[in-house]
Length: 287
Length: 298
Image (cartoon, rainbow over all chains, first blue to last red):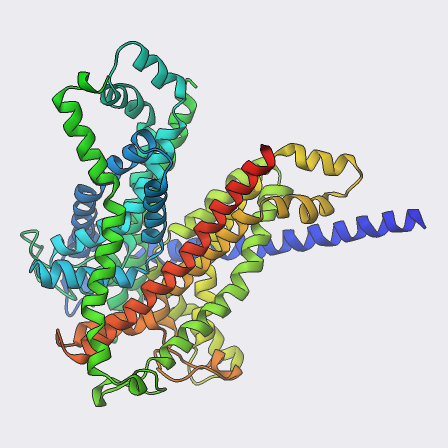
């Protein structure tokens, strides 16, 4: 009897583990397939001309330069606003704030900010930046909208990086007569920098790939020239992919796959850089 | 001690403090603007109209129920897919896979999480929807099911990543103790490790749900955008339209300040409140488990 229950238990275990492994397999194979498929289909479309020429004949020919440049501008614009603000907020949470009701409220606000649907950010950007502050549909309005969306990612990652610096570093610096800000600037920030950079890149990566927040705040369907000022609207890779795959009839399939691949390279390239920075910093870390 | 602080130190502290509060300020600002632009709806559109089953804004039919049911059916479908696959994969990575495999697979899953949703929508149009059309013999493959499958794929990386972290954080001694008293590895996973990581796993699910409800562009591309009530079982293989997709698709063509414009902001307000509730539940679970752990330890 005892031997039988033992057998059953191991039968269940074997079945269960096989099932879980199967589920994991079924999750991971499509992921690999998606990447392989886009790379395989998109690679033939990519050429120097595709990357550096303006679109022609209703975007059905030529290149996607304005979309690439636009996404680049939007990413830089987002960084200008969200990086200083996000890092400062993280410093506050990690180094200044005590664990009280207010701090808890800040944390809840950050979690909520991270969870707000991207299209609601678009509405907010339209209401505040485009109409109320009269920035119009522009790179500026879109960048500000994306900044607020990116903020929670940057704050959370930076705070984690700051907190990972051992307490002893602070104690030693303070005991040598360093002020709180000196300790942060000279000791803590340099130590936490790789973690912060990683978080910043991951936040910006999300901003670069988003479509909904820029739909009514800064994205242009088509522009015959590159944007000249932050108050111009701009084309952007994600919105361009949306447009050419849903709004333009008779779009050559190759251009669609090519655009998807360029977007993925742009976004995952940032991801790759973040991963490299993180693993290098881990290898060099002295604590 | 406080008097010895220099001026610059005081200023910098003040700046950092101000930035620290920024998250609260932005949540409030977003809420205020949604209220400002959304609440006039209640004066302009009768409640009977607003909560009717007909969404046809050109003739001033602003019934948002079809949009809400559309969001619900797509989200439910997505979670039915994402929960088993997400948690199953997390358990596999944390408890079953050898270390080296996990080090390869987890970043791979997270890579999918970083994929812009417009790319998934694009593949949804080109591959998934023709596939569904053939299988179910439908007039169009752009259906709630396509949206659910795609959203499931979008939620899985979130769930795997956070749930795996939670499982990984369960002390090894728990597992060792369970195995030492004769439990099989399987029993250890179900009876010890998963329950110990419960709050983290639930947080993962809530955040996955949050991402699903709020996803816009991919859903808009593959669900067919038909604002009809999705209450029958067959609705899953019919075109539907979600709240997010409605805002994204129609905001561009609306005159600022018109009732139509206000209704779209009102839908945004509803979405904002839903995400607020989901996230407060998710975060309270984290706080609760922390205080529970502290009680046990003390």
